[in-house]
Image (cartoon, rainbow, N blue to C red; front, side, top):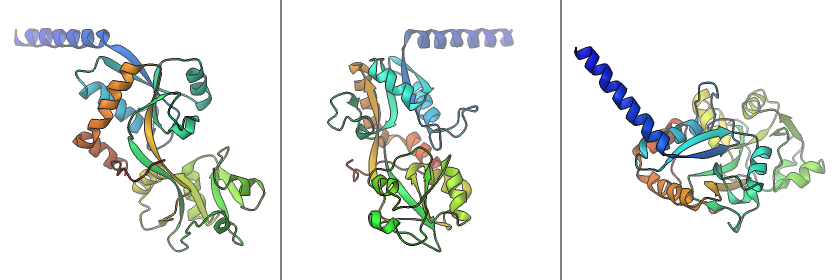
Length: 261
């Protein structure tokens, strides 16, 4: 009798939960970042992309929205935005979308602060002091195939900076440890994950001068109500202990407010 009653209660709870979900408007959250810390395993749905969306759906109980994550290529995302498709983009900056004046899209407050970091070996530390510091005899810069690096790309294209490319960031770590490159460029958020995962803290050195620093936000396209809801969520994150724990898991931290770009 108790077992039958328990099953009935579970079925009722499941039905109510399902009904609540169905009554919510589905909002698409796009991300074109398919590498750590944003995606660690697509098949297992592990990474900051998945954790953030799960947090929104589980703990924003009074939200009128059910958020759905979609990992898509940047070119497809650009097409959606140009076509006016409603949705939001995670972890991006206005300058990535030629919207420095924030007139084309709505932008939440910053979620994270990041930088394009120069990483070298502890025994041969490299400090970036402008493009000329990358032109020393025998210096080789590690990059990612197809990536353009604002601020030094002109010198790279002119052959003044020797650059060796690989397919992904983790390969560049291998290139550095095997002395195939002198330093490589990588988002600090990605490197902090690898540093923790691969136990690299005593093996790598971060230049105190990055190539550039920037903030990461949520871009919202053509939906003021969603923008207002997500803005309030982001404003509350600094007091959210679960969010702080998630960030620590990936070697990240709350924004300090020092980065303005």
